[in-house]
Structure formats: structure tokens, C-alpha cells
Image 1 (tube, rainbow over the protein chains, first blue to last red):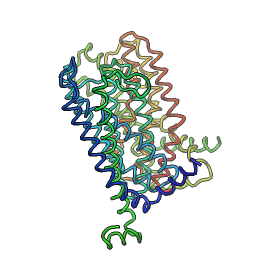
Image 2 (cartoon, rainbow over the protein chains, first blue to last red; image 1 turned 90 degrees about the vertical axis):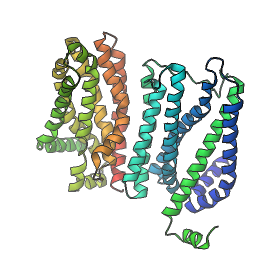
Image 3 (cartoon, helix red, strand yellow; image 1 turned 135 degrees about the vertical axis):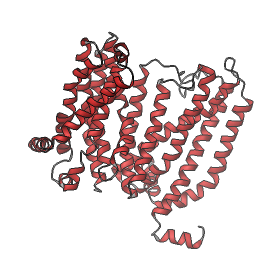
Length: 252
Length: 222
């Protein structure tokens, strides 16, 4: 029963036209919700959460740093999954998604690196250290750049998406290996204090704004991906009847 | 198996008849390494400190640059199309090609590395580790780089793009390869690091050719 539903959804969302109407209905709701959640999380974290007993107010950059890092990581994994679907099943929408996910993810990786450097200076006394997490984030940024570069160079959009998809799949394996291969070099970065399973070691007064700003960032990411994917869908299907109707009719 | 052997002997013969493709990476390796003593300082203690990294980065770049034209000639002459449409799995001839390429470009780097390590003032005791780490590492570099070469085969501007795609993927191999040599210089335990390097090689040998074949299929539009 569940399987049937999943299969139906897979095929329905696989159709560019259905995706377009579906996202037209979704976006007017999702965009304000994303903005609201993000603003609540950021304002709560930056203005109202208690300051840290050791780091004072400088720790507050966590409310930007951690959401950006998690978004960049999840984005790359999502890109790898979309790449797998695009290469194996040649699903059109997966190709579109591949292309839509990359730019925002690369931006988040860059934000994560920049905020991490700014946070590292008052806390560790250095902007940059070659420790496991920082190095993997840098490599992640490089691999986002690689995927985007490959996509831009190949002219046929379907071929470009599949080539980039294969690269993203290899890249997902690489991120994991890089993470563990740098770990035996001594690590400066603190471990994760947020845990879904088991006791979190972060103060609840800081935990909730952090979770909310993470959720807000992911929702904004989703909005960005949907908008990009819609543009790409309309461009790719520009010769089809429904897009012509859409453009001439000026709306739904 | 007979397909593999036929493909291997063909690739070896083709490479053997264009000696520039064998010699150029080797000279690149030697030349890049000889730049460092001139640029940094010829002081032995300083050189020995940076030597593991210099050796490994130079080997990595030599392997990567040698891969730029890996599939180009086959594509231009139409051999690649035939390979991909032949009634054998594309992985078989692709693996043979990779093996041939490594035997004639990667292996010479390994063989000449003790000489260069000595020129970089590394102690004689670590020359074995240098060779062993490169012996385990360069095939992995060849296979990973071939994925990038396969994805960029139809494009005219291979060089820089290939580097952008492939260099991030080279990092684990580089860390463990150079790490093994550094550990040997410091007199630490080497076997564990070499074992991980071997594990990376096993991973790339088993899955890499599949990815290369898939990349070639994508690039040729099949």
C-alpha cells in the first residue's frame, strides 16, 4: 500500500508538467513559512538566547555556521542521490534537480567556511587550521565547484546532468573518506553537540533556536531548489504545448 | 578473459609506439621535483622535511596530466564507439586500458622514485616505503583520474577542467601516501597507513572501472 503510493508519487513528480503545477501550489505556502522559521531561529539565536559562559557572545555565530554546514552537506548527498537516479533511471526531473541543488549548496559551503574562520579567531586564536571538519568542508566546496563546472561545459543538458551526476556519486564516497582520512591528523574542532539520538550536550536554551534556524535554512534551500528547478523545467520544455500555453496565457 | 588479454596487448602496443606519452610524464615528474630544491633551499634538513609531500604531489600531477589524452585518440579514431557497442561489457576493455596505461606511465614513476627521494635527501631507510606507497597509490590515482578523463573526453578544453574535477578526489590517496612516507621519516609505524592505502586501491580497482565505463557511455551519448 505504502509502496504503491511511493511509486505513484515517483512517477507523478517525474513528469515535468506535474512538477510545475505541484510546485506552483506549494511555493506560495512554503516561501513565507521558510522565511518565518528562518527569521524566528536567527533572531532568537542572535538576540535572545543566553550568552556562553566561556565564549561570551562570540558563540552566536553558531546559529549561522551550523545550519550552513548541515545544509551544504545534505545538499551534496541529495545531489548524489539525484545523480544516481539520473544516471540509472534517466529520470528527467532528477536531472533538473541535480542542476538546481548545486549553486545554493556551494554558497552554503562558502558561508560555512567564512563563518567558521571568523568564529575560529576569537575561540581558537586562528582563522584556519587543517583539521578534519574544516578540510572536508573545503573539499566539499571544491567538489561543488567541479560539479558546476562540468555541468556548464557540456552543451546537451541531459548529458551534462548525467555526467555531473556520476561525478556527484563518486564525490559522496570521497567526502566520507576525506572526513575519516583527515581525522587521524589531530583534530581541533569540537565534536557535534547536537544529537538526534541520546542526550545532547548543548544547553536547551541554545538548542531550540539552533534547531529552528537549521530547519529555516533547509526550508529556504528547498524554496531555492524549487524555484531553480521550475525555471529549468520551463526552459527544457520550451517546445512543449503546455509551456507555450503557459507563456501565452500569462499564468496558470 | 581473452577479450581482456587482446585489449591489453593492443593498448600496450599502441602506447609503446608513441613513446612521448610514456616519457613525458616521467620527465615532468623529475623536472617538478628538481624545481623544489631550487625554489625552497638546497639545505638537506629542510628538504628532507618537505620531501614526502613534494614527491607525492609531483607524482599525483604527473599521473593526472598523463590522463588528459587517455581516451581522446580512441574517440577521434572511432575506436571508443566500437568498444562501447561491442558485445562485451565495456568494463573489460576499459580495465585493460587502465592497466596498460598504469604499466607504462605509473610504474616508471614508482621505479624512478628512489633516485628522486635520494636527491631530496630522504634517508636510505625510507626508500622502500616511498616505492611501496607509490606502488599502491599510483594505480588508484590512474583509475580515479580516468573517471574525470572519461567525463571530459568529448570536450576540447580538457586540461584545467580535468584538474578541477579530479584533484578533490585525489586527496585521500595523497593524505595516506604522503603520510606513510612522513611516518617512515619520523621512524613511526608505517604498516597501518600502507594498509589503508591498499584498501583505497582495492576500492578503486573494484568500483573505479565501472564508473569509468559509465562515464564513457554518458560522454558518447549512449
